[in-house]
Image 1 (cartoon, rainbow, N blue to C red):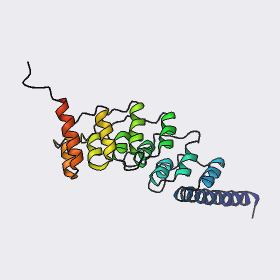
Image 2 (cartoon, one colour):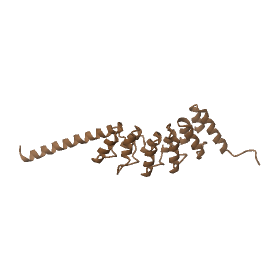
Image 3 (tube, rainbow, N blue to C red):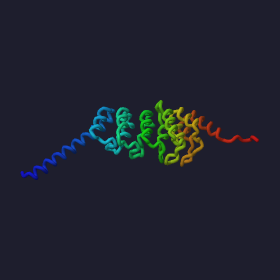
Length: 224
């Protein structure tokens, strides 16, 4: 075998080994996220693995970690330089939206400090926070409102965070939104109000809450 052919063969073998190593690192990385192995995630990042890598289903690593409640893995990723905090999955969900619905306050604070989008077109982190059922859901709503989340944000079909809260979220979350000024009279594209959402969910306490809020918004009649 001449020198040129030996050189080409060596190069091909090296590239093959590199490709195999990269594939192995990829599998190890997302397995570490699945198992919430923060140490292994950190080790791979130190070796140059991309924190913005996407899973086989094209989900950004941080969105994947937060969705799976892999708290340690997410915390490590949040310290990475060059992290795209606003990367979205195929459904348009961001890391802040995942943190919001999971009630992961430390992750939400870290994301906001890194300029994650609190307000965006379509479904927003506040919609997700309002739907949350963890004990941290009201605190998450408060955090987002403190950072200027639009309280009456409309989803693609016009659904508001209050509508999500009275159907899916905690009663305390819905009360907080009403207290903070959420408009209970708004309708989505199907003509449904927050009261309708509460009725669909058979939540009489939420029907009473929203009905009272609507009544307080109406001007007094019969007075001179």
